[in-house]
Amino acid sequence: QVQLVESGGGSVQAGGSLRLACAVTGTAINCMGWFRQAPGKERQGVASMYTGGSQWTYADSVKGRFTISEDSAQKTLYLQMNSLKPEDTAMYYCAARTYACARPFLQKVAYNYWGQGTPVNVSS
Image (cartoon, rainbow, N blue to C red; front, side, top):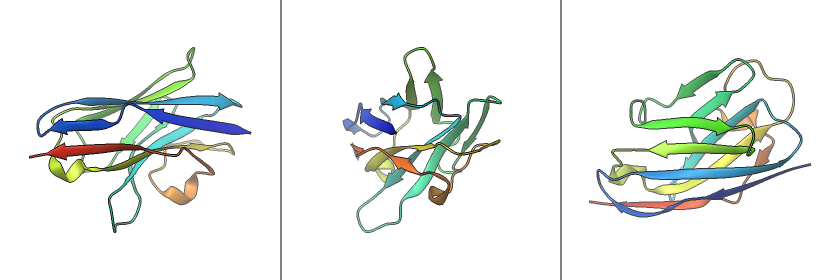
């Protein structure tokens, strides 16, 4: 069983930064990701990480601004978000894949555990 608990969301002005954290309890996980869902829109992949091979992938909309990382000792996944834009406003979710993986995924169907989400609001 895996539990994911996100934190770090909040309100910030455009151009600001936030760091999201996802605390992981349960079995070891090699593939994790961050997703977001704005009101009335589909949940989309933002960043993902394959810790087994130190591989990362990002959505085009966040490349160069967001960084996914992990602290394996603390069992925590992070998403550093810089140069935030109003279009980054959404609920952000942490996701984990507990079955075989060999590369990072941005597709939500690739993950079988989800956190409850943390809200991010970016004002102009």
